[in-house]
Image (cartoon, rainbow, N blue to C red; front, side):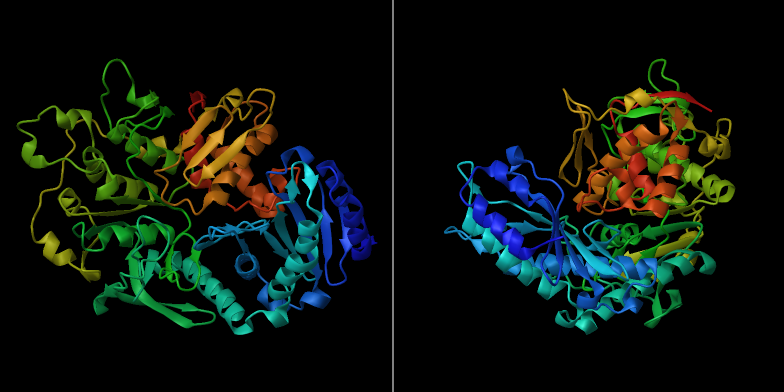
Length: 571
């Protein structure tokens, strides 16, 4: 293996030469305290950063094995160290005369959620970080001094400050890893306690301007009535005390300014672990919970929406509903069936993001709208059957359009000024009649078990002469070949890197498992198996540092919103 002296010698030789000379840096170089590796560089695309691998032997790094001796603890420390690298890169960033940060080093920065990623890997033998470097050039020539500064000043400073145990805040790291383990353990225990979610007391759920970041101007904690309190024992903190959302049907009543929507968003986000200081770090939800909004205008391909919609305009059959631009009610009905198709065990609905027609039907209007009961069977009519026959829990939150859920709900909560109380008995005393189904009942069990088979050629990420064009300008938009997939309604997406990975998964699944047609559920089962056994590395032939593992539900949601998707048949 070549050493850093040879690296420096190459730099000296290519100083101020054509950028094609950057290819001479490809290979492994021993920098004494770490190994630097460049696998490939494209001189024609120097506007994009090149990926460098930095591997620090554990004899130098010195991270104690107990910090990564389980999968959840390993994910936690990898996430923590990724953030430390990002912070250190920011601290040494150069600023131009306009005060704009000019970073020549970068790493895939995580958001508020902690996920398995490819930005960093820790083992008993080494710590490996995948750092991107924007190689300096000016007018097609190598900027030698800038390259020297990157590799002999900036990068060593980042590595020393972030990837050596004695130089990080040991107490902070220990607390970070322990918190992730506690949250994960609490999530695992929820089913044994008959719960689908736990909201720790004094959690802060308000977010800043529709982002995923805490709103520190609104620090009103969630207050929970003592009668709702439960405790979950965890390995490091002893116990987590908070409100348990039980399995079954739960109704949460609250107006638009009560904190209801923020609470529902926090429950939906509880499928992931959150960093310390997020405010939601001890709100945990079972991993197969899916938030289902009305995504008006989305495309739908052969989804059986007959449990909710019995009659569609024209000759369209509800059993194989297809649309390039679904109306809000049909779109949300399709999303419910799609979530059940791939294994959702908890469905979350909030009035503010739902179609009123899908949620409920006002029984007082039956005499003036007699045909409505024949066309749409709202969730309030079908929820009990879904919960009892499928074992799927449902959480519905709202105010003006959810009264019809009161007769069928197992638990009814009220939130007012972020304080949650149990009002089940009071609400039941209102004696609101339960909706009755006038038409022939639908067998929801058989519908949830049905499989839609993908036509492989409809999954095509190619464009022009390129086999694969997958781009994510932001978390909610994905370019997949010639198609643009709008993921704006998927509130449980974690960050842009997860969206990128979903695109790679769709391509991977097509290449590996779609030589011929296959059910969506089976494809996701095999992808889950591969990711669990082989890791994210199995998705691409090239090393990447910008992947984050998504859930099967967001993969399915993206697939179902791909406008080229075609379904051959349903069995």
